[in-house]
Length: 158
Image (cartoon, rainbow, N blue to C red; front, side):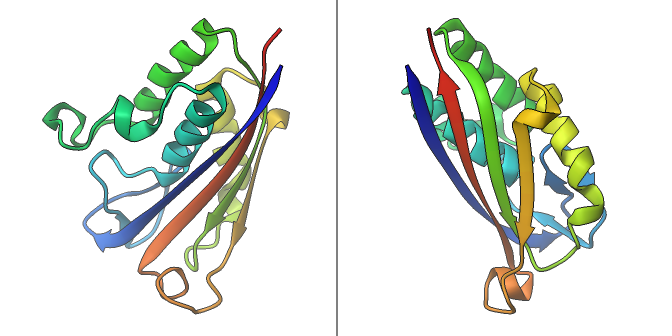
C-alpha cells in the first residue's frame, strides 16, 4: 500500500524570533511567529506525514491552546509523530518540499536543511529534497512579511 500526504504552513515573519527551516537556524533579522518555535517546514512535513498515514493533523496532536506546546521544539514534535507513524507500519519513501521566501537566500543552506530533516526522520538524505521559490515581490511572502512551505510525502506499508 502506498499513500501520498500534503502538508502546508504559513507563518508571519516578526522581529525578535529565530528563522528556523527544517531544524536549521538561518541567519536573518526576522523569524517565524508561531506558538511553537515556528519552524514552518517541519510543521508542513509533520502534517504531510500525518495526512498520508491517516493519523490526524498537527493541530490535533499538539493543540495550540495547550500551554505545554508554547515554544516547543518542532523537531521534537515531528519525532513524536514519527514514532506513531512507524508504529503503525508506515515507511517514508520520500519528501519533496518547497519553501517560499523572498529573503534570505536559501540555496546556501539547502544541503544542511536536507541533512537535518533526514536525521530527524531517520532516513537517507537522498529521500528528501527541498527547493525554494520567491514571492516575486507580491505580499506577503514577496515583501518578507511571511514564509510558506509545501510538502508532499510518499509513505508505503507492506
